[in-house]
Length: 145
Length: 163
Image (cartoon, rainbow over all chains, first blue to last red):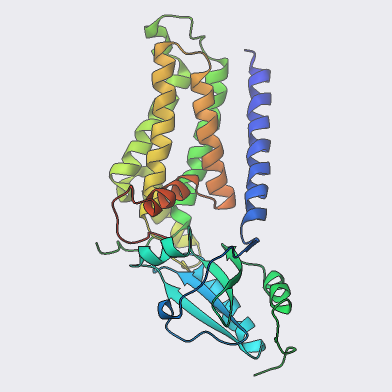
């Protein structure tokens, strides 16, 4: 095979890798349906808030968990009736299986009965969470706590 | 089992960057190199084969002793001091497993090439390149994801999630 063809193939490979990278990036943090998952109150350190709770699944050595923690904490602060609760999966593989958590951080938007309304894997977009919150019934308009 | 100490996530990405460059070079060499129709000895002396064998050895080093592997040492000594302190740390086990995935893919390519399978070498090098590139540029670690999946299904024998 002539060198020029090989270089062309190598170039195509790089382009393919770049496209794949952007595709993966767009999937990361994308909102997905909660399915029929229900969060058990016993699995949380704090009670479920009404009308909604942002449940964050983290582990001890999780590179992107701190920034999600800050993000969700801010969102919870700016919405009355929305709490941010964190679940440490470091030694709890059973919880990871129960809630089908494949990576951390994973965020659930949970209503007061525990039903999972939405889920995000990776770092969620702030606006996506706000949009999901507007669909929650009984959510008061944004007010400072 | 206790969690191992966390590592700077930029270290594996730096190593992946160097590895990606080497793999791209190996891909080009493998594409322009000797046809697999030649004899076994000639196939083993193909420049693409030799470079890929070196890369395989580096992957093996990364699996057996990640902290002493060349790019990790280079990162700690020359790159990390020039960067801002690590704001986050990550579990070292998934990246270490990812080195094993790279080793597996490349070794399969080397073996198939020696047997005489056409294009085995550039395909293996190309596939490994894509994974290394995604890790270095987009911080997406394919091998790590495989590790986490195996862990959820219990195949790695660990009781605690790694990430």
